[in-house]
Image: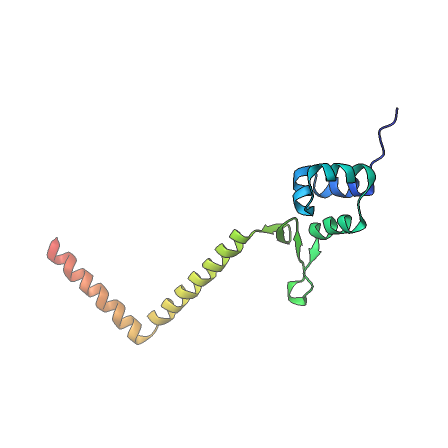
Length: 129
């Protein structure tokens, strides 16, 4: 006895979203509807939606090589989730602040301020030791 034939929707979905619950959540249907579409086929738009969800290139020259796939932003096999992007943004801000401080230290006013602080700390450490 041959195994029942599966629809093209099933083949597409199983490669991209093997979990029935996740597929149902993505498409906005219940699990029984996913199972029915696996056997009988699904509207073409459902299959296209899954394919779009899988790999969607960002259509901008500056974003060449970036794509959205399965709920993440991807570039060169690196998955960028929102928390990664926020962390990178915070690091960039911190680097900017440090560069500003270094620039200030390299001015005469910055050097004088730093020396004054060091002398003040040195005075207090000599008094208490």
